[in-house]
Amino acid sequence: HVQLVESGGGSVQAGGSLRLSCSVYGDTSNSACMAWFREAPGKEREGVANIYTGGRFSYYADSVKSRFTISQDNAKKTVYLQMNNLKPEDTAVYYCAVHVGHCYRTVVKEDFHFWGQGTQVTVS
Image 1 (cartoon, rainbow, N blue to C red):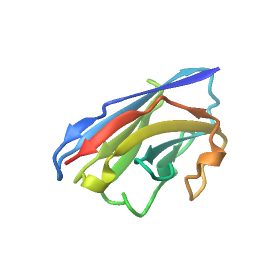
Image 2: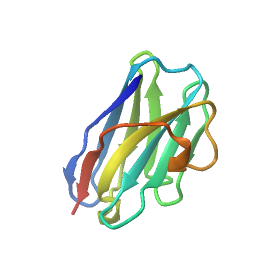
Image 3: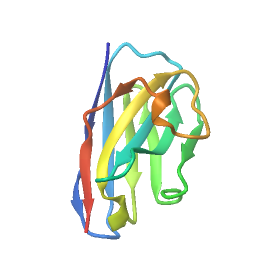
Image 4: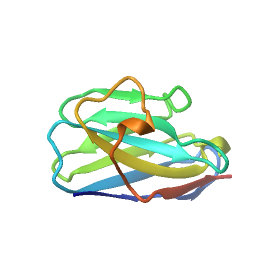
């Protein structure tokens, strides 16, 4: 069984920064794709970024490219999402997720098997 726990959400003014963390508990493969999604009120859950735990591959949605950075600390089994130059449209509940195997050049929720409970990010 795999459990994901997000933290680091909060409220920030436009132009500010936040760093989200996702800690992974339980047995996970050395070859897995970790990702961040977000879901704003009334909108579909959208993929933001992914990173492959077994290498250097990462991918970003166009809406966050150059502002957000996904990274990992495999020793701590933690994935991070550094969010800079935040905009009001970044307001959402942010979720981390994982699936076994390599990442793709898309971040699609149907590919992911395990999810965290979400953390709220509000930008005003």
